[in-house]
Structures are given as C-alpha cells and as structure tokens.
Image (cartoon, rainbow, N blue to C red; front, side):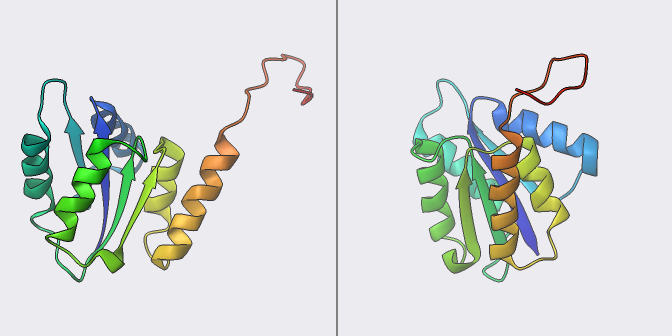
Amino acid sequence: MRYLLFISHGGFADGLTEALGMMVGQREDIVKVSFRDGMGLPEFKEHVKKEIAPMTPDDEIIVMADLVSGSPLATTMDALSEHVDLSKVRAVAGMNLPMALTAVENEEEPLEDTVAAMMEVAKEQVTPFNLDAGGEDDI
C-alpha cells in the first residue's frame, strides 16, 4: 500500500486533508499529524508513531511537509526510521493541494514518477492569476 502522510505546523495538515477529501473522498491511506502550539517534540513524535503504526516495511510512504527545515519533518523522519524501510519513503516539503491531488492520481505509478509529477505540478501551480476580464494572458 502507498500512504500519504501530511505533516505541518498548526492545522495546515488538517485543512489539506479536509480539502483533499472533498475531491477524492475520505481514505485510509491519507494520514495527517499536526504539530500544535504548546506541544513538545516528544509528544508530537508519539502522535506520529500512533498514526504510522498501521504502516509496514512493505508500504511506500510519501511524506508531505510544510517546511523542509522544520522540526515536524525531522521528527517524523526519525519516527519513520524506527518503524519502516526508509528506502520506500520520500519526503517533499512545500506541500499544497495540487501536489496532494497529484499524489493520489498517480498512486499506481512508481514512487519516483509520482514524486516527480508532484514536483512538476507544484511548479506549474505557482503562477499569477489573470484578473483581466478581457481574457488576455499578458501578466
């Protein structure tokens, strides 16, 4: 099985999971853990361990985090290293809805191809929105 694991500061992972669920339905392979204000890293790590408990060394896991250099991602990777085969884990920072949707749409593709597609759609989606009512694309 392939899991998506959303990791964030605050409620970002919760919101992303909710938004993705509106598009693809609620799924058991989408897991979230939020590092809340006032929570210590040991408590956060315990939450991560609880959420990853169903995952096995045979599973593939795509970790999506809000920040590459954040404590939640580092703590999550530490917890994963104690539980699964890290060769089947890919971590990507800068998570957003288009990346998450692409991960779901490409769930049958090889792990590396899915991550590459996620990175590509993230680049494509960071673009100004044309406010010109005339429909010209000159921004």
